[in-house]
Image 1 (spheres, rainbow, N blue to C red):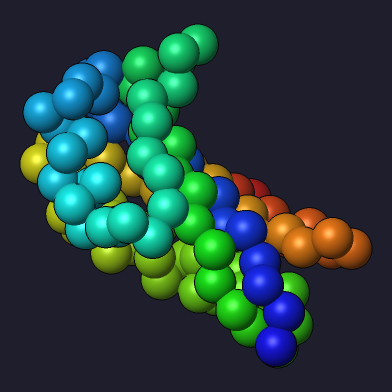
Image 2 (cartoon, helix red, strand yellow; image 1 turned 120 degrees about the horizontal axis):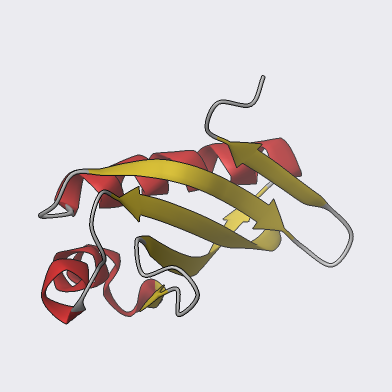
Length: 98
């Protein structure tokens, strides 16, 4: 098993603030970090670590995490991007990309 850093970006229709980000952070727990993107406050960034056998499996874990966190958001939000990376590989899924 390899440890992967997962990145999740959620986009809301309005800017995130501490109150709207809190339920997402609570859902993640102490298992990562959540912050509002200072360049675009409509983006909420999440970072967490997970173990998986391969990059594709880590990306699948990241997508599942993204959906779970999106569902906990108290504002309408969509999953914009999910990434999984280790020391050698990076896989990225983007909404609307084929």
